[in-house]
Image (cartoon, rainbow, N blue to C red):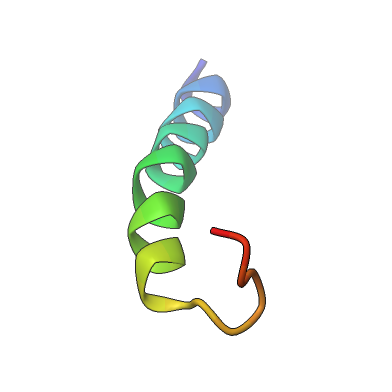
Length: 32
């Protein structure tokens, strides 16, 4: 149960953090 909770939290964290990082990192994806 706790492992599933950690995996879910990690996935949500990636979905929240990745777009924020994508705004600052523009050299690898010039299309965005």
